[in-house]
Length: 388
Image (tube, rainbow, N blue to C red; front, top):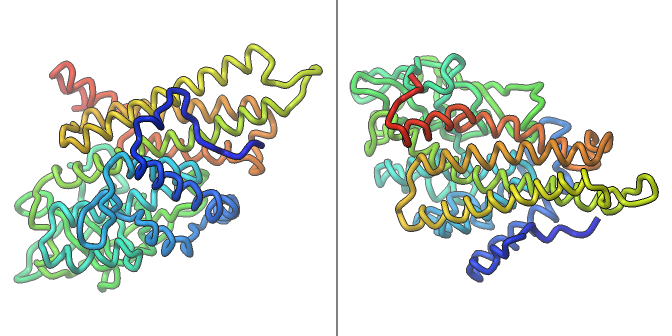
């Protein structure tokens, strides 16, 4: 196959700065040389390549778009390109970056005390402390406001009780950002994972996101200091703002997975001969490839404009919902079309397509399902809430 050099039908590169292109090239090289040679094995074994975490930190990938405290301070276009290249490798790689930076470091950076920031952000940026984000519960996914996890005050402490499920990095985290109901509403807490009563159990036998650690967290009367509560936010605004940050990365990341599938299918179609000519010479195959590159191009432009709005401080969560819904849904369709072009070869791990297709089934569900984002946009444009 021709070496991968990106997908850029509308010359989007011309709109990127030299620094943004350099960051993309650096991450692309890292994925190509260090992650891709072994990601299929980790997918097969249901493990995450934890030895890559120091390299990811060295490249400034954790909290990449945050400023200060050892973070790289890249702009949001550059951060999006990082997510794109990481997910071209595997959704599990991008999930590690998203969870560490957007779901764990962001709430500390945005809502934490100065003491909390100084304690956690530098080691998290350096990859020496790993975080996880405890919002989803076994019976409460799309409706986090109905969470059952409770935090009750007891003098200068809080006591947390509850269960969180589908938590990336749960069993390897040093700190969990746990959202719980209190007498004054939903609050966020920094829970060190070595505290008595805290346990994490990995969820195995997944068919999707296998190269990612997914856990269930159990909090059984876990005592933490009152100072571990995030002081700067109350209610669902806190976790929802974190999800907006993470969804932004997914908008770019999904296009990375789609690009991998498209590139693989295009090169395969050029090389594979049937009925005495390359597959690429057949009309139906060309129609699939044209649809794929068109949807990738549209998704790239959505992501790029979203990044501009984010850097300008004009981004609205509903705009992120539109891009997440569109890009992930189309990436999943692109993966399926690519698998179709490869025929039986599309289901073997010699090619990355089936792995991306399986991963995207999860990406289409987490951080808000396709349907929930549809209703979020519907509410925004009509003023009528169809969610409840």
